[in-house]
Amino acid sequence: MTAYIFTGGQVFADSLAELVPEIPEGSLVIAADSGYNNAKKLGAKPDMLLGDLDSLDRTGLGAHELDELEKLIVPSIKDDTDTQLAVDTALERGADSIVLVGGLGGRLDHTLSTVFLLEYIADKGAGALVTDGRNRARLMKSTGGRQTLRVERGYKYLSLVSLTNTCEGVTVSGVFYPLWDARLVRSYSYAVSNEITADFAEISLRRGTLLVIESRD
Image (tube, rainbow, N blue to C red; front, side, top):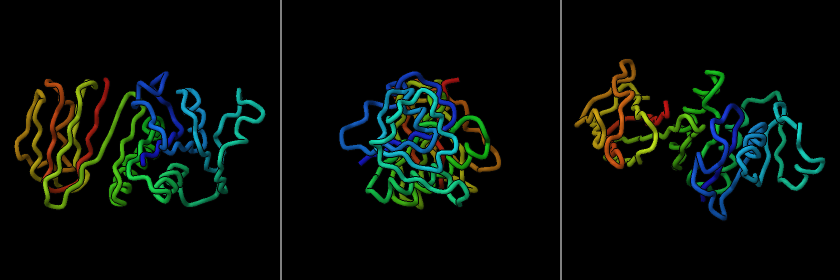
């Protein structure tokens, strides 16, 4: 089951179709606080609203618009972010894939915490993607067995950033700057601003944790 989590922050799209394919029936759709405003803007209908609701903009909402939603309201003074709470809720309800919408623009701390949530989700055995319409990011993780990811052409730039001290055996084909069994290090990024030249790029990783970022500009 895939869970779609709408978070706060700016989303650079006017419709859901610009971000992800149609949400399949049976998916879990969660709005994390002001993520409800983003979901509404994009035409998505959340099943659940959670968080402390300190940033939800109620302007323009119907008098009883939120009544039928399942709610998980928590105190504003808490340890977890609303997005973390949404991720844990999705995992507890059986999600094996999570799409995070928003959470990449604005404050740097929010952006970084969203990026590292991808690693948290991977450690829980689920797949994850985060997108805001301008950027899209996924995580590859391997402890020795080769992992492969296919990235369809569509965004302008493709960048690879090592989240571990090193990423070993990185191979990329279908791009302007191909790599073959390369070693990437966290402290010196050079596999950035590549471009997909084929219908898709194929990325493989033998060891390490690799952040795969697509950017429109």
